Length: 353
Image (cartoon, rainbow, N blue to C red; front, side, top):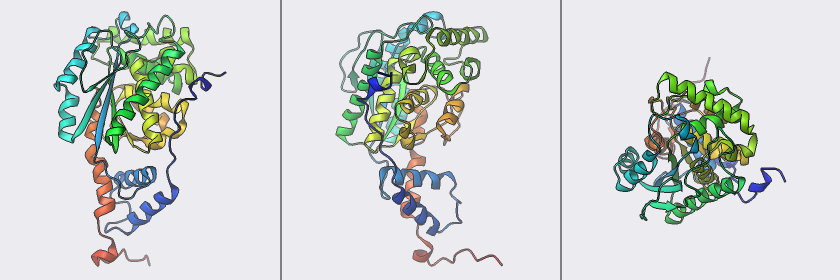
């Protein structure tokens, strides 16, 4: 059995409707504007209409799923913050005090926090889905980060998280994370799946200095030598529990025709994992922004995604994903609510001589 076959429980993403795409494009061509004048908004509207199979779709019911876990590789000194910050920040999410909470309130989005493997016991909370796989992964620089069984469990947890918000009603989902040292795991995933070198994809994460950055690159190089990750086994060998959970969220959402807003480096690394299991997941993905992390653009290019925003952010949590919601809504409202040339009595472009 190949490593991919062991994950045959994963849902299959829905495919976009070519008929609906053509309808959206035909309507765009009749709206009171020069062809292509709304630029990326037009492309986004056509993508969303095709994927949701609805010209009248709007991102009205919104949610952000924040998956959290710790990483054994933190012991290698790759982060500027201690591992205890993961649990502390999860508690901050639950109290509503983090940046993701502020932006979720502004964007009218529900927040669900997922404990995929935080190295501390967390209290029960209505906003928390407890699915702790272990108290953090193993040190990926010394061997596999997790077993294949744990990788499967992380994917199933993400599917459960999506089903929880889907049962309450959701039109679009943003995917974010929290986990000290998870930029190390994400960079290893991106290097493994894109073929880029660790030096090309590894950034400063929590704001590390030059010496710690060089150490981080060396740790990732060692992890790739030790584990030799390829394809579907990449999650288990160099991933994280929260990264697997995010990939599970994406695959479940794509199967339900719910568009997915990617956040930054770690969220996009999870999308690379999801695409290894089911390349069709790309049709559901919207790249909300380009992170300040150097490997993010490489990962986006591999997925053939163009970011909507570039704000020099590197916070994670789903913050950048939430900021793109107004653009998603604008894309669909202009498609739906603008008048056509016929309706407005506006003359069309004159033919060329």
